[in-house]
Length: 170
Image 1: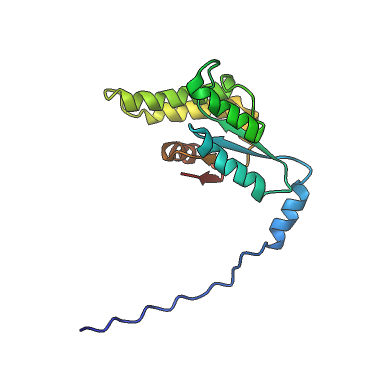
Image 2: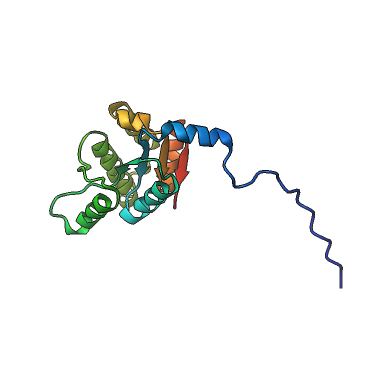
């Protein structure tokens, strides 16, 4: 039997899980203003999970979560529960069929068309154009210091279009 060579020694880093002073100082200065986070996705629980975790993790900051999700058509029992859940869990109760939110819904429908209509492939340039239009129309989206996305395609588009910190949650 051959001998197994020993595993290489991995150097330990001095970094720990404690907060550094720069973060404490920045955090202390921001407590009086809400921290805005834009969350992009198509399924309510997948969108709500990172949003509620961030609310807990960043306490005592007041976190203002802006949801970009599927449309909430009135009277649609299939999607209505998603909108009610996001309203109850995050206080995000505005209809998603206005302005930049409607553009996001249009983007989701473009994704669906590429999936269901095999003749139409992903039109990445069109997706990016729609995202930049959303951004231009929405001062809150521009001001959000963090984006969260729950779909790899959406994360890729956000990364290509904007230089913002991005949390991918799948």
